[in-house]
Image (cartoon, rainbow, N blue to C red; front, side, top):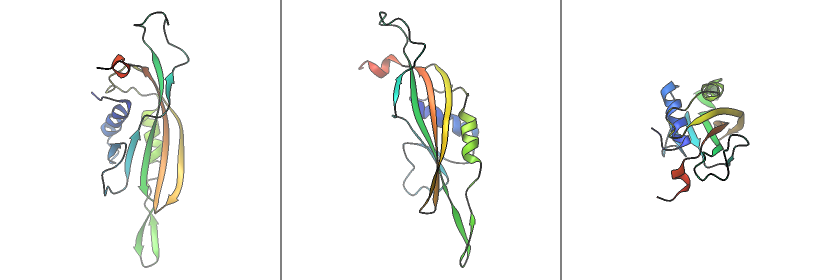
Length: 150
């Protein structure tokens, strides 16, 4: 069982075996491309629907949480003196998005009611790296342990 939304998405992607290591918040030092980084802590707020009676302190609260899934790949590899070839795995970002959109997150400790991919951005090549940033909206129950000090 994952402790966070990022951990649940990491578990989902690792189970699919894309052959790419998945990290939360950042790769290990010296990690070679390709790799995936899942980051949460972006905007999260009350969902527009599904929040119960505001007079009931035990009512379940539903939140929409934003998570980014970044795929970092090497753009080109040298094949000879003055020649290179593409190293980017085309379609991998779209495969990751498809694997998340509308799928459950069974490793999440809270009840997840929706996983929506909002977009895929391709960041231009810099330092021979290409990055795809996938924005994911997760609608889930807010756990009491997230708001009540232990």
